[in-house]
Image (cartoon, rainbow, N blue to C red; front, side):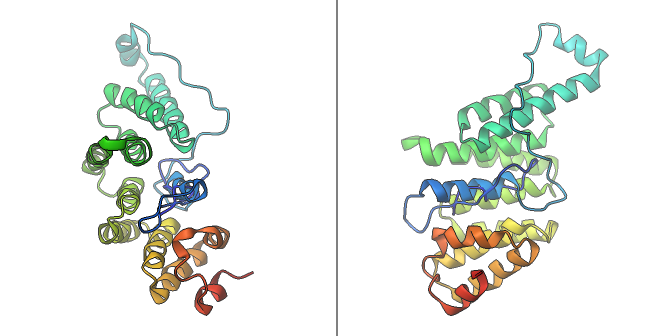
Length: 251
């Protein structure tokens, strides 16, 4: 799977290009970007919050009397936590995973029911473990999944959490489980472009032309821009030369 702009249709939808790692092959920077793009949410989903705009400033630090402020101005507290969340999401899209994790932790500390923060923290942990975790990679994956599960416990139909769970399983090459969670995402959001794309990418790695074309075609029907990502996606190398694939992604 690519981690590029195909990364999550999240609680935000920032530049997303999907990049996952092909079967047993290390992900290239482009593929990584694609995967993250999927996650960042360029896909259309009713449950996604807009990603922070470029140049967004970090939220102000919490003051010592923040508890009093929260009681007096709950709207101001919510706005500040939302800014923290958006900044954390932006860090995630910039591949600054530890910064993303730290900011989402701040949000969760002040609002333990903030399921978007759990979702972004969880996928950031999974990516951090995969690309930077070394020997602790599996621990980071497990902790990331626990956070995504916390989000789903709070909001079972949260599209971004469902999608990120599939994306993380795909990243760690648990393809059958990833397919299951992509299907769960589609059941909630039939217009989840990158979920169809994620399924196509998995079948592409397996050399399954029929299912690759089937699900990639559904993604393209929802968003024709997907074609340009598919032309670069390494996950489709095993089916790229088939006439069916070429007819689908050709100009």
